[in-house]
Length: 169
Ligand code: HEC
Ligand code: HEC
Ligand code: HEC
Ligand code: HEC
Ligand code: HEC
Image (cartoon, rainbow, N blue to C red; front, side):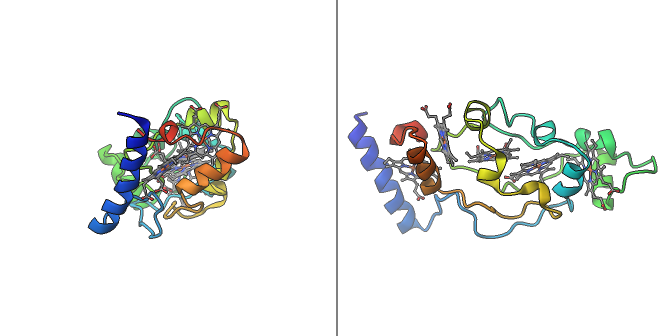
């Protein structure tokens, strides 16, 4: 498909979504409530690094969320020691995955890779997610709005491509 058509098509998507009342935008202004009262602060203060839990953050497209068996490495319901909230204890006993609600997510038509930004780009997580390590409640909303203008502003500043097709498929 010629490039100009694609640009026009992307433009029409905005109009169509507007009419249909569908939010194509990735910026979530509302708060979600998470199933377990997770605290980043306690874990980061304990010395666990971001990519020990978000194992894909440096070398994959997706950062990933740790699964229940990872939590169970330290939170063992039958052993005294670490404080473990009742809700988490239940998930661990049944070895069920915790249904975390995603806060940062790009639509299907957008390409984004952590590897490119954290790995080769050398960017700090804070630039795009705020100071997560200081949060003592679960991540419930986007501290840094996830918007196309945000991506574009940095790309322009850093002289990285702003070609539509670099970020859209
Ligand atoms: C650096 C990456 C990047 C580039 C370059 C880029 N976009 Fe986007 N675009 C995004 C992201 C991320 C989103 C989703 C976030 C949002 O909705 O703001 C998006 C969303 C959109 C949407 C959905 C509309 C909406 O606001 O809901 C359209 C249409 C779009 N882009 C068109 C374009 C066109 C046309 C170009 C070329 C002029 C372009 N984009 C270049 C990253 C990019
Ligand atoms: C490497 C060990 C380790 C792993 C893995 C781990 N935690 Fe923790 N967790 C801790 C430590 C240490 C604390 C602080 C305990 C304290 O203050 O008594 C803690 C505290 C917590 C608390 C707060 C408890 C309270 O009431 O103060 C929650 C909730 C929690 N963890 C959930 C999780 C979840 C969910 C996972 C898996 C995604 C997880 N943890 C993985 C070590 C770990
Ligand atoms: C250049 C901006 C940027 C940087 C830097 C960045 N992220 Fe992200 N992050 C995003 C975007 C955009 C998404 C949504 C991606 C998607 O839906 O595929 C996201 C999603 C996530 C998610 C949700 C789960 C997932 O797998 O998508 C986690 C967790 C996360 N990032 C952690 C991190 C950590 C940890 C770092 C630092 C090591 C980091 N991010 C650095 C932009 C960034
Ligand atoms: C002990 C494991 C652990 C560590 C260490 C950890 N995280 Fe997380 N992270 C989680 C869990 C579990 C969630 C899902 C619960 C929530 O949203 O608070 C999460 C959620 C997130 C999200 C929101 C994902 C989304 O889109 O829903 C971001 C962004 C994030 N972490 C970034 C970071 C950064 C940056 C660091 C280092 C400063 C870090 N995390 C350290 C376990 C961890
Ligand atoms: C704070 C700066 C910053 C922000 C914000 C940012 N980027 Fe980037 N982006 C970079 C840098 C730096 C590179 C080049 C990394 C490298 O050297 O490989 C890059 C590279 C890319 C590439 C690869 C481009 C190519 O040449 O193939 C894509 C695609 C991309 N970014 C998409 C996005 C999207 C989508 C967003 C928003 C969700 C975003 N970026 C937000 C700095 C940023």
